[in-house]
Image 1: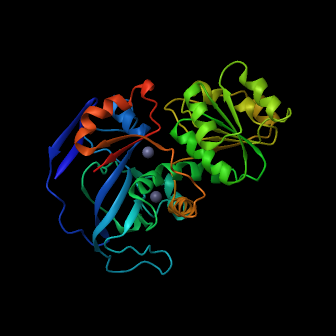
Image 2: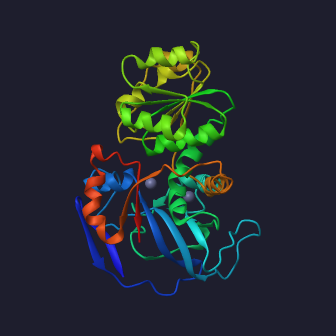
Image 3: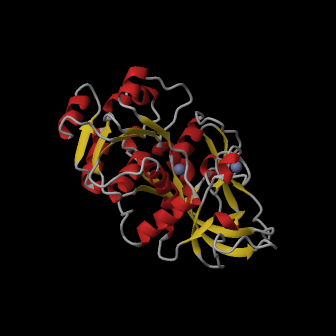
Length: 346
Ligand SMILES: [Zn+2]
Ligand SMILES: [Zn+2]
């Protein structure tokens, strides 16, 4: 079968690899139909993704169909096992957690001490067939393969929004309206929050207004603070999400938070984040990190899409068939391409 391999930065090749055989116990063989491309893949292509080694098969946002299953001999406790059948369409939970570390024991599999991410630490799904743990498949009969491949991205926003427990009507500022910021906006809206989106890119702000019907879209810059203050009647937003992963933005996000409010870092960067302690203390601020997502977030997202409460219509801005990925991929990196989500048909 044909497989896309990133052999080194900027070097994506299409190569021939054997089709996987019968899955071992506890695993399923799946046919990959769609692969969504995200910031992680683009960073890996450029050569600036942390903890990334080459060669690697990219792809962690997958819409798959179950080809064969080999159930584990001892079935897990009733109620915990997902029922998966041959022929079913599934979203794929792209993280492997150890199951016994302190985080896993608390159900926080998303921040397992030994977490492995498909397409980053282990080979992902840019290939027609893949063998995966049955427990990582989330069946969703009513979702299209496109929607199934969007589920992983959307879980990032669902998880981030679950961190501060939003209340209906509160003002939420989302700094950074890239794909991750957009997912945060969608779930904060579902929670009933009033959204203020902030970005340096006018195209992204227009996208927020037009496709997500965001109430306030504010250009980042020197005037932004006064604008946000005015929108909130002087109170400032009670929850602020930074989805930029940009250290300058993260360092300057704290003053936007209302007294008694919460700040959530969804985006991350490899260096330090600093802010003045008096600003932190004066607010009695609560600071959250949000990392990846859990099986529960997958169920939340699938249920909301199935119920028509999350609109995925505007997400896919670019497409390529499998054999055109090598030529299209570098173009998706260009800012003028305005990629929200590129989708590969396998
Ligand atoms: Zn992703
Ligand atoms: Zn663990």
